[in-house]
Picture 1 (cartoon, rainbow, N blue to C red):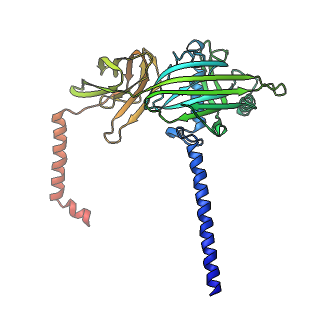
Picture 2: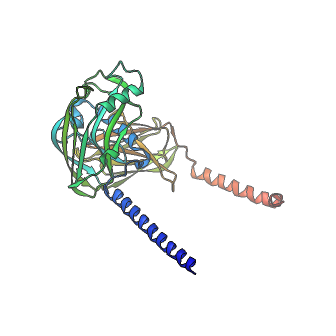
Picture 3: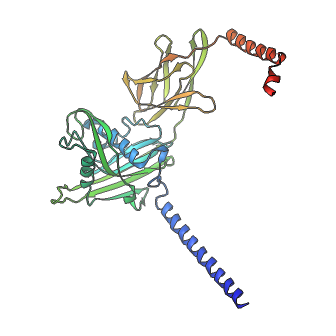
Length: 377
């Protein structure tokens, strides 16, 4: 009997201890998740890409723009949306040192990647380097002893060192008069940076403030650097208008639909040139999204130009309809052209009816000749 009592007491204490451990673990987990509730967690894969991959995309955008229109050298926010054509994310940049305040209007549908502090090294900047390891050591040593802060709408972010990442080797094309002061052209680079991906913010006004500080170290050759950056963001929900355009493909009428938060005008289609062209007219300070349902008239792969210059774009296949949409991100007024590989062939109505009739007739004939019996056996 005493043995049973002892066993029961042991079980009760064990269960109580287990409950305490689970509660403590749950609390710690909840605190970890809630420390930065408006951000995608470090180590996660927002929109299918890792944090190091997003860091590489941030650098590719920053390093590809000339100094005069680079958002990192912009004192007011005038160029905050320049070349921002990712369909999921808006990138925010620091500055070349010192304090600056920018105002920017961003769409409510997009996440916001904040590059707080970064150091990159490329073969063009350091021609004596001959390996990815050399570039990585260079990038990391430049941030030695660095400290960062981030505040969004008065909320201080915690454990920002969890958001420090090293990129893999990535390609970059330096323009003329670039931020790094090197000869224009293609190169490869590696970066070490602190970057945080905010989930889409609610419509309205928001403030983002971040700082980065690197203390110089003569022993390692690290230079002192400090930045203090504030963004006043106006987050606006995009309003889409639908434009339907009737075109003729192989003698048959086809409806092509364009959804855009800009005004669409001057639509043309050339089957001979395999080209769709139209103008979009929007605000220079507001990012607009345009979706063009191209697959009813043009087959890919596609080339997209903006004002005659080829541009990056995303494509999205609608799983329910099977249609392909070209997604474009722009500000202001532009001429858009989409060039396909082939014009999609279309059967005339009479031909389609004839094909269907032949299929039905074939099924009936096979049924009468015992085809179904052969299948069953």
